[in-house]
Length: 621
Image 1 (cartoon, rainbow, N blue to C red):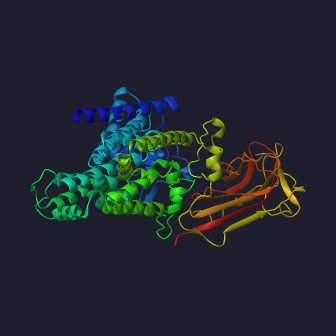
Image 2: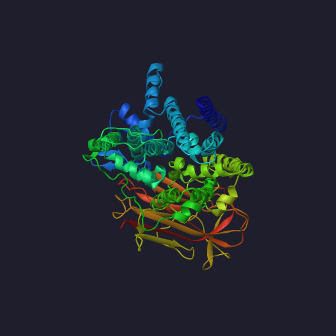
Image 3: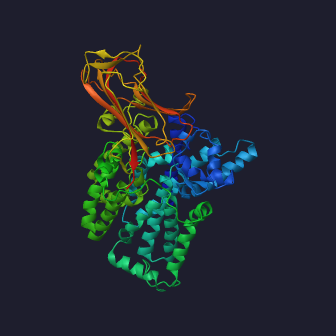
């Protein structure tokens, strides 16, 4: 049995290594950057502490490409008293530390640069993700072994959870984010809790306390994994007996019979281990702010009365079942679990529903950039259990059918992961039309074809805008920059419209002079809309809304563009509404004006009417 288990583990390790090389030397042909996006925030602790010798992230900013770009500085650094602090806790960086230090040592020995972002550090993070994926799978295998599942079923489940879900994306394509590390920590917690309750081993309670500390240190919201404890205990009597033994010197009889004795203060030891594990973050906060408790997400929070559960599961934007259809196997899994054990059914479903409620109640319920529903990745080890029980109960024909479906799910997941990495699937703005327009498309001509949705905010917009300007091309409006004469004949309203073509690539523009009520603020939201008319298919495909913040020498301080058309289509001969909305950055004193206009990049021929620009204050109740 041990020999077979060892062979399975070796097979899994080799499979992961091969996948690593295919992704990073096949898809990307010698990839050089793994630390990007929000991953920079999780990782920033390491160069700050070990290279810059500070816990003030001002130094990290000074050494980065954003040093002189106040308007483009990372959103994950916030002001905490006199220092700039990181809103991402240090757990991910803590697990990355061994290979970071190896990269640092190798950089010094070889004379390579050592600012924390050279190639050795990049691969240190990539290999860290691979390591914790492998460890997570080992503990997942041990967890699944506590259920009556065959070796073949175990191997199938381990392959499926890697390649048929977005765990693959966060392990191989975006390894600097926290999710593969959380997957490891949550799975370790589930395994140790399961073993504690089913075998009565006190050391497993201590391991569970350590794992829970890691869970919180990496991603604090994942403390909801405690709600899975009743399910992991297996039955009510085992749960109650295990809880009772927290506070007594008598352990329950394990699977080997008899009673074990262990020290009475086991629960105190567990609490001490948990606190010791989370202490790095508490100590860092004390050093940075003077308090171990500091809300790291100012201007963000949960809308507990308005969860987006249906969107979270089924939307084309990020829906869990849309982008990870493998997890639909939970549904038949629950039917089997119901017949097997009402107790396990109730508590597993309760855990799933609780996770769906809390995660979908976050103000940004789709979690910004990312492939699929990334907060669910962390708990795949627990979600996989009913799937395994269902699959194991099937007859041979049923197993064959489900295997076929899993192969399809793997193919879809790998293609869509590739699509996301190439910009074919938009990072945060997919909808039904964009999904089916790009479905299974891998050609470069589909890259960056999908426009951006209005930006989501935490709070609400004030009823009255602080700025409101309108241009219907019917008369002269003060303040507008006029580059051409308006046309007549195809207007959406009134008699005049604006023609856009190769001769006239720019619309009228509005240069908004910054005023006292605008500067020094970070709570302003722009709403920008226009009507457009295409006679030829996708003539406006390359057109973009432009917002450009300029200083008094007309140098750009901040520049953003948003596609006019959300997705290419065949619709012509009618007026349509295009709109975008986004939060302005904090406006400093050097901002002289904000210029709004539309740029016809591809220089197709189409018409505009009724441009409207409004700026609102964001109100947080």
